[in-house]
Amino acid sequence: MATWREFETSAPALAGLGKSRWEKAGLFLIGTLRKDGSVRISPCEYLVFEDELWLGMMWQSKKALDLVRDQRITIHSAVSNKDGKDGEFKVYGRVIDERDTSRRTAFGTFSEAETGFKPSEPYHLFRLAISEAAFVVFGPEGKAEVEAACAGSAVEIPEMYDPGDGSGHTVLHWRGR
Image (cartoon, rainbow, N blue to C red; front, side, top):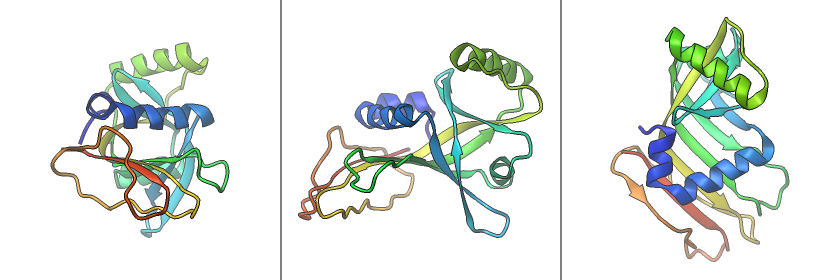
């Protein structure tokens, strides 16, 4: 698992593409697991603070309670059209529930300086530990496949590549250590 800074350092092209997609929309979508095991998709704002990706959420919101119960998370850039030309950025990992009062206070101060909004207690605050990330741009066929990967050895593909399947899409993929 990697912090945002570790990911950004080991895969700068991928991190840059992803962050640009997030900044364009101002948020991303997260996938969490409900109590019954089904998937919940929710919009979420984020901040990069102290070299980590942070997610602040309303106290007792359904998505926050999902993450308290099961820390696995998927993050997906917002998609605004069906042609896929802007690409999709996907991040997989786990969240860490931040309970340290001094870090929460520092985050609140940073949030207010960056966004004009200072969260008030109680609220949920999570840091992301990244296990895998991928960026896909769809070609004219509209088809793309990204190989599923397990966290393990670091794999960095420093430039986008054409998988050679004739689809015309490009893929950039990273797996954490």
